Figure 1 (tube, rainbow, N blue to C red):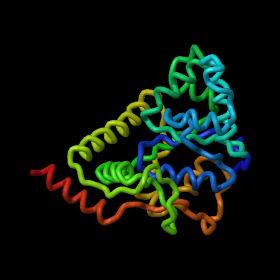
Figure 2 (tube, rainbow, N blue to C red):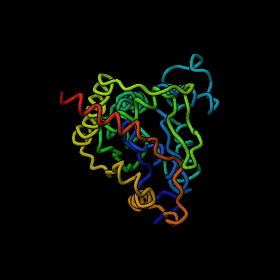
Figure 3 (cartoon, rainbow, N blue to C red):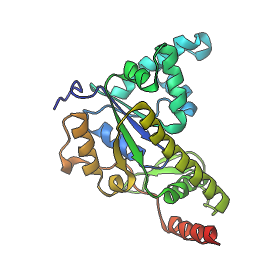
Length: 257
């Protein structure tokens, strides 16, 4: 195994949908010190924030391509986190936008896969999926309603985006999010098939039940030195609670009525 990331892969992309444990996985990979520092660098809502953090020139002072290249270079540096391998978290809703950006930087390539390989080198695609899509939809809606997205294992809030509010059961909203999440996950599989990509598949249930085992398997696939299993400490905890279970029961009853 190569500690510098110059072995089997130059990069990995965590291909996910919201509330599949991607924040847990990103923190685990970053904690290894050998596997980059993955973030959602191409989530459209966060582009300006990342550009500011990297102290890029104001977007209106640059041409579109010039900004794309400057942002791409900064993202590569950030995503490597001082290691030899680049990490990226990518939601399906942002895939087409990223491909369009890479097409401007690396024009003339015939496929998404070709553009990604030109940009990032040898890539391990990690498909992160949640088997229970209803639980996933409920988790997403509760986070949106309460403003609380992530907590640490000790219960400390890690990410809150709005003042605390009580969650409210909404059958139609759950139904809509469930359909959207199912469509996004299916779209990943369609894209993998079209690009002739065989991803490493990681399920939410396995990841949340045994984060250390999931991390060690990914390190092995990447060809990087894994941490000692006893040193692995998950950085986030589950937010599912009795309200989540109650909503699942209510939704199934309402859906069958």
